[in-house]
Length: 207
Image 1 (cartoon, rainbow, N blue to C red):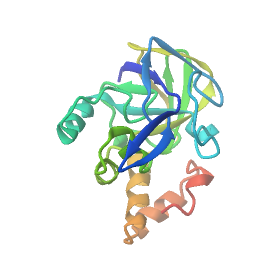
Image 2: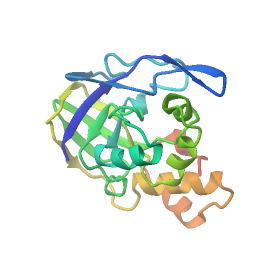
Image 3: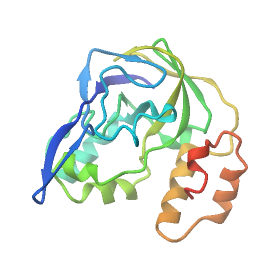
């Protein structure tokens, strides 16, 4: 897997249906990012109490799926528009197991879980359908915590260096969270997750 774009964002104003909010959902490409222990340099948040936590410092998404989002929205939709710091050429959530450690550039990251979409996607895209459509698809992207700080640029490879378990993926966690929110919890998958030592505390009770 290869990085095709590195992105950072600051809060901007967006209006939808006569309501205006501030969000840093849209991240803009930069030549290189510095990944620090608690934040990517250049990232700022309108609501820091909910974003930028230690277990979600870096967000990665698959670049090849942006074409489908452009078809859905019927307009150009640049990399970074879904909030990712790392646009990866071809990222598949089912290939990432909770706790996986990855080298990218000079940084070492650990996969902690998926992103669950909020309605700020609707505002930043200007389309009230996007949050619901994002939720339906199994493309949530991956949050990482930082094991070792470093720099990342386009062209760097995302390489697996350690796998601690091979039973529960990031996609499994996302699907379990979605099932519960839809009122149809997956008890088998939920138990697998609860038995996984790499499931971080914030996801306990989320499925």
